[in-house]
Image (cartoon, rainbow, N blue to C red; front, side, top):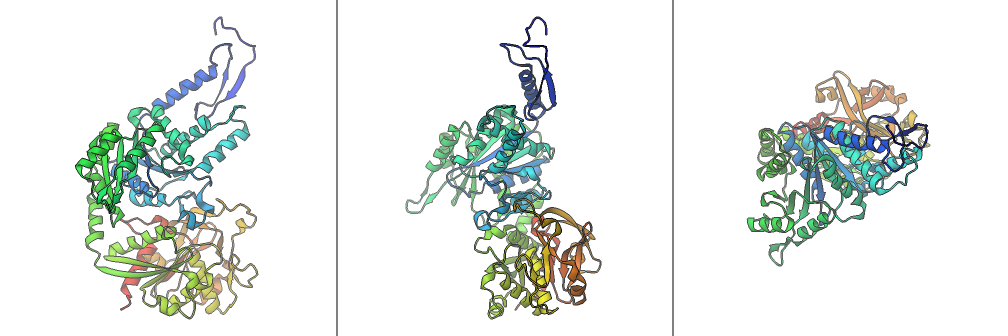
Amino acid sequence: MGSQEFLGPMKIKLRLPVSAIEAGSFYVWRTPCQPTEARRWADSARKRKAKETSMTKYIFVTGGVVSSLGKGIVAASLGRLLKNRGLKIAIQKFDPYINVDPGTMSPYQHGEVFVTDDGTETDLDLGHYERFIDNNLNKYSNVTTGKIYSEVLRKERRGDYLGRTVQVIPHITNMIKEKIQRAGESTDAEVVITEIGGTVGDIESQPFMEAIRQMKKDAGEDNVLYIHTTLVPYLGAAGEMKTKPTQHSVRELRGLGIQPNILVLRTEKPVDDDMRKKIALFCDVDPTAVIESMDVPNLYEIPLNMQKQGLDQLVVDHFKLDVPTADMREWTKMVDHIENELTKTVKIAMVGKYTDLQDAYISVNESLRHAGYPVDAKVEIDHFNAETITPDNVAEVLGGYDGILVPGGFGSRGIEGMITTAQYARENDVPYMGICLGMQIATIEYARHVLGYADANSTEFDPNTSHNIIDLMKDQADVEDLGGTQRLGAYACKLVDGTKAAAAYGQSLIHERHRHRYEYNNAYRAELEAAGLKVAGVNPERNLVEIVEVPTNRFYMAAQYHPEFLSRPNHPEGMFAAFVKAALEGQVD
């Protein structure tokens, strides 16, 4: 250390944050009037880390003017285009709400809760990501304000911040940046696409905006790109589209220190060259970087529209990537088939709890449509609130449908209507598919009307039932917190040889995603199977029943898992495909 003076001969051990330095703990000498050795180590580590990760490219998708502009579809479409160029993609969404995750939120507030393989409860946009990009995502793919603050507060309680005042900048923003980097590191991605939920100007989004602003300096200007989606409204009375909302939105974004590289305009009508040039001038982007996103009847057409306008080429040019043009021939063929070759129609009745908001079942809806593509069928879906279904009206309400589906849900509301629905489908040989709660409903119905156990029920709905056909899982008995404590994520399911389920999947072992606390009670398994409700799939680790079916019906099958989370437009999930095929073959005249 030369002639420097020391405060004392004692070495001080400092444990530095992982985000600051990756090498662990260091012994440092403290000197008066000079930066500490720890700080120099940290600065060096930051520079080294930036150099090491400089090859990772970061794309941030923001939204302005109004919410629900389709930022998630833009992000997913770009992800598909870049993947088809041979790039390895990671994609994530930041949600500014304070809930740790959407798992305890009402479907009417949030829509569907999408579950990843690793058991993370996430935003429904992740369903779009997986369906478009065909990547299985992980816990880093959905981050909320609540999750960020929870982790920062845990670190503060452990003393990780060494007594410092914990603030939004740098501690919250550093945690956000860490989540961005982890999304790429956990998948070895070459490009990380991050969607920022909400709208520019929302107070909840400010820490995320500041974090992505800082990323430009941290990762390097050539490694960061900003895409801003805005609304260009059409005023019918004036007969013209208005660009002022877009100009103001970009001005607000620039006020936060972010200059967008690309603008995506959500419009009802085409954007002409003059308007494109006007927006480019006022928003300081190149006219070729103004991308139009018109409303389309088929979401899977959007990547092709984006490619025609050069969105992915703009990204590749900005990052100076030497990659081939995206080969979208198979995707184009799929879109053409959807738009021009679905010559048949299948009508499906979905009887559920949250039917007033179709986003609550968005993956189920998409999975049904996917299942129609291989059989050249357009699937028409009508939603019915289970509370409106009674023994007196069930035949009138559901009599004209080719198939009936009961999806997942929680709580006792509407349960009797679902049981009536399942009974009607079984007794009239209407193809029936049950998902999660729909599987439990099918089992309860069978116990009541075939075994004769009139009060058969789930202990979720009737804790005092004398025939607990569906019961709380043993490992859930002492659980108090509702969030993140269910049986979540992908589990193995061994299919029984000779069953319709095994035929539907064409293999003996599958892995499907779960989200439930209650389970088929094996104490009744022998009775139910002897009476004709066969077990067609079992989890081999815990002997949990995963699939039941009535083999004497054309199609009567139900799963404890959520098959909708694995369906893709170019390869439908097995049970959905078999269900729609059966509905088509036994079509009502």
